[in-house]
Image 1 (cartoon, rainbow, N blue to C red):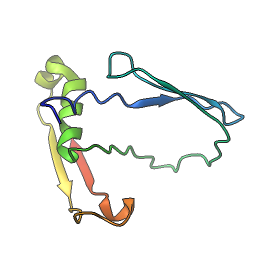
Image 2 (cartoon, rainbow, N blue to C red; image 1 turned 135 degrees about the vertical axis):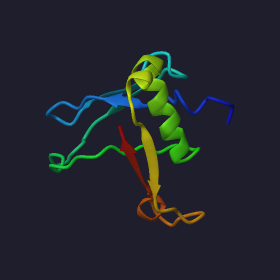
Image 3 (cartoon, one colour; image 1 turned 90 degrees about the horizontal axis):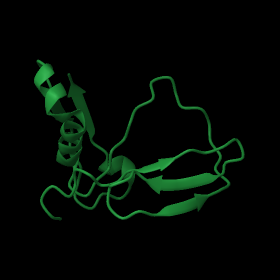
Amino acid sequence: MKAGEHIYMGFPIRAINYKGEGIMYKEKNRGDQGEVKVSGVKGLPPPPPTKVGITGFTGWQAGEDQIRAELGDELLEFLTVLKFMQNGSSVIDARNQNVATVDLRIFA
């Protein structure tokens, strides 16, 4: 992967209507543009302590770089503390996503 390429990966954005339909697309200026129609989506409301998951080719360090880039220099200078802590580790070639998942704690 090219240096810095993992910072702006182009995360998909998706708004799903009440019928479970919509268009998935990438943020502008985040790599190749593209759209995919999605339908038949079903699910439940998020749990009360909803969390965010970030998955990338370069591991949790990519998440740290992406967060720093999105915050920008002005906000980073304003913060007195910004810590990223990895809790646990994953085995190589994990058999499923649960085994491959490692918590990343962000303290600001």
